[in-house]
Image (cartoon, rainbow over all chains, first blue to last red; front, top):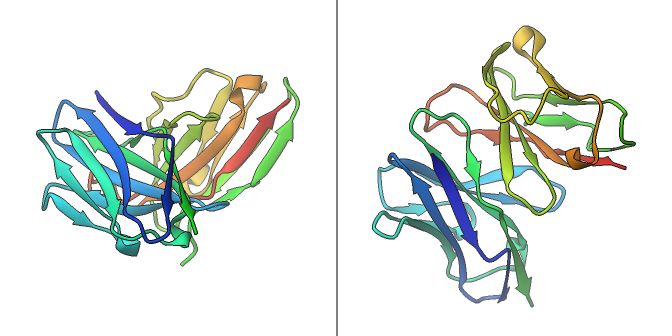
Length: 113
Length: 115
């Protein structure tokens, strides 16, 4: 079985501040982990993915995430928030032979000017 | 290259009516997925097509939902009769092959409201 827990349904940061969105996963086999972003009125867009090649994964728009097996975490970070980062972010997992992606409940990021 | 498209973008129907959602995957993508997000909850997998065949329909909530992909191109998801709890956003995604690394590209979703 696979599952994802995102801590915090809403996160507010000031423009220029660090963004940290938390994600913990559960998987009985080595997982493939993803972060997706949904901007208003748009579809889900892949930000980055972990596929066991490197524990620190860099994605688009300056985001990165670190896979920590000991903590079963895959937190998303960005050093300096921009107004355009305001969106909803989803952590997701795919493991074993599963094709389906299991999503977390999402975190809405608000960036305050 | 056009992305995954979904139609309609919004649908408002009354309980007991029928609604059909359509998804056009990226051209050449054999794999097509349906997901649903009920208000405030996580996005949940509904089913997976490989070409015209249902590979995994373990997420389909009940027999009021019928998904088809005739010809292996676009797909439809019919809800008949619709119930209040069917309200939510229905996402479609497609991928080129079935490898676990393979990225699923998502459409903008169809927001369904059942009154």
